[in-house]
Image (cartoon, rainbow, N blue to C red):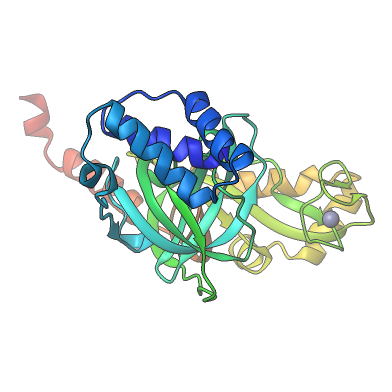
Length: 313
Ligand SMILES: [Zn+2]
């Protein structure tokens, strides 16, 4: 019932009229619980009551605002109202009470982060299920787009199982940092999550399985980009195989020697990467050292050395 009340309040507020939610709820409660009026009829009755009170024509209230149906990859502008079909790829823990759910959803064209406000009073979504997300707003922060589900949004489950596509991307820049959780790591044998201090977030203390990966930050002079290299790509790039990494750690009695070796090899160098975008990361398929910036530096040095007259003047 509070869901219905919130929706009514939101629609009136769009029309510039302030109606109190508890006042709507009281009327709904009376009709539904006291007079046993069906919910849909009660809703109409309450809407009509407030329409009359505020002198608003019915047609205006029920006018459908048609929002455009878009694909994830079409979202390139901030503050637009859109509708999209998508599958919930991942849900993250919300760390703020104003956010009821936060995660990643995707369609054939790619993935996008979403935030569902608690105030929106919308139904809960589940990982792996597909929905129609009606009347959501787009938002941009530091070049990353996301969608927000608010009080005028709707979530309708759909039967179709949407295949989530990936967005191929390329990026060139310098690796400026290697993040913790890189190098030789251990994963949970149950869920494959990376262990933190020998424990899985879900399964507690477990006997982990070794893996090798790199989480790095790149910078192209304009914006930074997080990249993720899996074991295969890491081995190929650094020449440190998983076996070698285990040997290094055993010898030093310290896992972090692998991370240090990777840092020495990669930080401060230019690379060209290609892969697929997943939330804020690029999952890297190929990475190669980019020699262009170095060639340009040499060219600059050579040209300034070749014209001593110009330099004197
Ligand atoms: Zn686990």
